[in-house]
Image 1: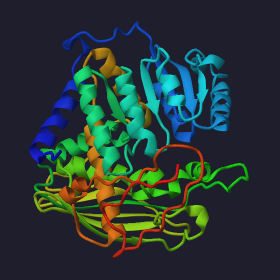
Image 2: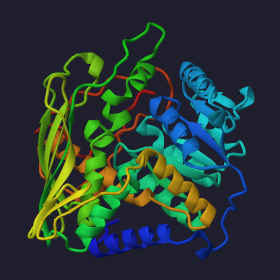
Image 3: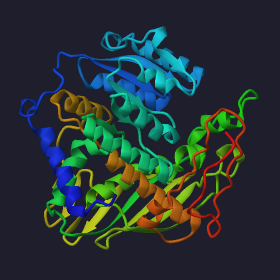
Length: 429
């Protein structure tokens, strides 16, 4: 499961070089004239946003099937799409009928049973591993939102499904749009070429205010209430260090060409203490150690009224960089290219790779970045130094099983010094 820095950088460079080659340089793919039919599983804000991005990114693609656990989410998404269809360009690509709208826990299977070629997975992260495995088994290309796991068990399932996708020639692109932003791509290429010398340390941040929540309705079961507020339950979201801060941690892994070997951290729950906010923390601070001895300091919080900072910074022996568009030091440089929308670009790259016959597969990489976030979370939850090998060897599984929308006790708020790394499955569904 470990990836050396050299192998990581070589693989990343090869993928970028492949993306830059003319399509005719590759083997048989999917001709531009062939339509690509898209289905979406998970119709919340990110799912509907990803659909808009996908349809804007490429020609001869269309949305033909949608599914969601909850009927009201599905109805809201259809209204959203039908409003967007007032634009003729969107209308031509929106081909969803009543017969291709599905709800319930098996909605994902029903979407996959249609003739879609590509599926967007945008449900709460707890379902990602199961849905990815089903999509690959059904022979579908995949765009999946980050994060892709909430614990070790689901992360390992994602890696297994990603390896199977490689064997079957299926594409997987993750919602880490920085990987498809030309500014990040060019800046980090220069860092890998030694623009700031040997990188010795760095800082990554996602600090912001609070997010949305939904008051409980009488007809909602425990499980439904928690799923409708999935951000606030570790079993559903992974906690915000995993659900959100994974973006910045993915950049750290990208810059250093490796995942960390251990982590030490502190965190807690200071401002979001109402039961409405489940049992996650509202702030984390983690020191990650990487294989060559570099230390990356990570900070994330979701607290109203606090200072915001989202970004990255890396120091080397000959300068520093924000990894985004600036290098300062012996070889100072500023990215001057025209800005593109990376949320659209990631879908454009995905479809281009399918048509070229060289499908991108970002599954293992995003699984390792998700595990990086889980490593930091567990260092904070337990109050211990946690190593990568210890984490992966724990086979941690915190997903409620079996699935049903019924009673479900809220897990306790983690307590450093008492919470154990190797927690068992939550029972009660």
